[in-house]
Image (tube, rainbow, N blue to C red; front, side):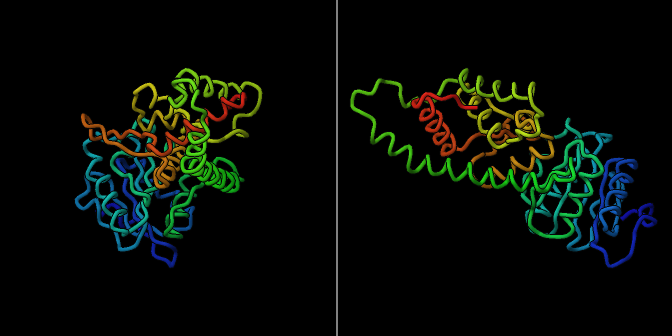
Length: 305
C-alpha cells in the first residue's frame, strides 16, 4: 500500500474494503461511496503505486476506473480481480465508463465480480454494501428507491422465462414435432427469419413512444430476441451492444447478462483477434427453445411483442 493512502485508512468494526483506481479523482470518488456504504477503508492505491494490489484477506475490493490510464495499464489490475474472484478470496466491484464495458467484461467474467457502468454514487453505494455484506451475488438496481423490489420481480420473471424455455425445449418442441402431420410443408422447422425478429424488437421499442419505458423493463426477453436475430443473421454481439439492446441501464444489463450466462441461456465466446472483447451468444438449447416458441405463436396467429 502506498504511503499516500495511509491517511485514508479508517479503523473500525465496519466491513473492510480495499480500493484501487486509475486516478486520484476516481480513488476519492470510490472512497466517498465506500464510507457512505458504511465500510471502513483498509487500503487505497492508484495505478502506478509501488504495491497496487495489497489488500487484506477477505476484504471486498472496489475498483473505480474513469479512463484516465491507458487500457494496457488496466490489464494487470483486471486480471488480479478475476483471479481473486475465481479463488473465492473476495467480492469485487468494478465501476467503469461505457467505453470500457467490453474490456472489463472480457477480463473479469466471474460471478463474484459486480460490474457498474457510468455509475451514479447511489449505484456505487448499493453495490459496495452488497459486496461487503454478503458472499452471494445479488441483482439490484438503485436508479429508484424501489429498485430492489423491481429487480426482484424481474428476477422472478427471468426464472419464469427460463423455465418456460426449458419446458419448450424438452417437451413442447418434441410434442410439436411428433404432432406434425406427414403433409406439413417443407421449411416448418427452420428458424424464424431475422426481419421478423427485428420487427418484434422494433415493436417493443415503439411502446416507449406512448408509455414510460421503465414500466415495460424486460431485459432478459429483449436480449434473447436480439441474440436470436443476430444468430440468424450470422452476426456476433459484443457485450456493449447487448447492453444497448437490453434497453435498461448498462449496469443492470451487465448483471442480467451474467445471470443468464450462469443459467446456461447465454454463452460467452472470446474474440480470437482481440482478447479485450467478448461476445455473447444464445446457447443451442435456448435458440432451439426460442425458435420453437416463435413458431408456435405464429401458428396460432398472434403477434409476439
